[in-house]
Image (cartoon, rainbow, N blue to C red; front, side, top):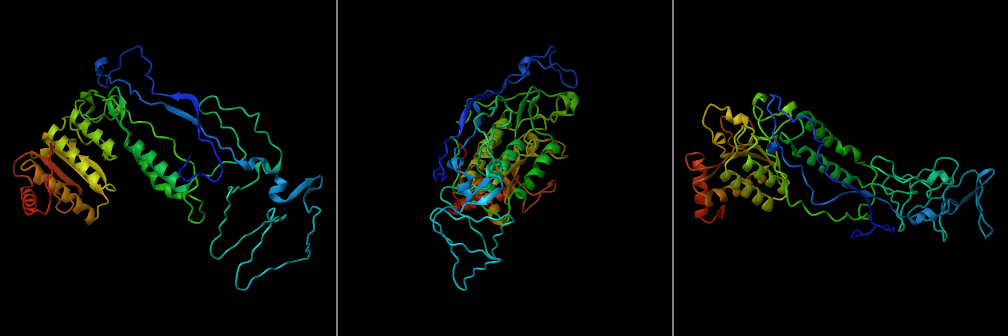
Length: 437
């Protein structure tokens, strides 16, 4: 149960016997081919993802004490052949019967108390108004509505769901969702889908740009589900189930290049694939991105048909882990590597040699940018003369298409002034060099 348990007793979700695992695709009669007719051999088809944990189809249920409460006790009236009537009982009482009753307190609270309860009922609408706020609290739970409008109902003879898609059984009362938690879960799901890499026979694929645009639109609309006026207790809720252990192996889809598809962006049917299918170092960097919760713009790390080098992969992975440790709330997206754009440049960029990576950070305020620059200077000082960077947020290069950090590996003249400054800061004790091992 939750650390702060719900006021009503509820059992943990019961796991059903159904287990959803990734299953191999059916074998086709003819071997698959690319859009140019090149056969895809069995050795080039990646293995199907194998999960190290069972994805269980859970059946959630709650047992609420209020299910046994009689409507007449909840609302203090009974029903006969003439409809609902007040249940006055036989005990002593005071009855006030007139056209209108007004109760008013000039300075303090107006309070109503009842040993058995307090009932407010009317054949017409009941309004509770306040110029400030209205708080409804109860130690055993707050219940809105009367199941089946007070009419008899049968919960014992319902048909339980047998397969996915079957409707769930009815319960007398169900808990309401918590708005912010629901919005966060939906946003997490959209981000997971947007950054997903899908193992296919043609390589690692991702969702098309129009689908990612639709996901971004849904993400932008999430605030619509949050009321700005009505709020609910956010502490009394069920605990999350224990998270499964992460997989011990990740499918490494190798894929192939289709010469007729215009390069490493698409395979058969226009399915995007990663690089040229030999991006071993690029995929190592992608594994680091997944581990840290960062992302990549499309497949920009290596979609120029040439892998990045082991040196730049190791350097960027080190930098990303340091950013995550020192700036846990900063988001990072890799926007360039050995990609098609840089391959088309007229000059000999380090990107073309697989020795450079571009990345952006969010938020991009001066404090965040200064903190990232400090980390990059630590690496520059600790790995002189190979680690170099350019702050293209403040100093955009001639070929730059947007603000970002450019990081490269190798000796030479690139960003020499920034490297000299980093070495000087380290020599004066203002920064601590970080060595890549």
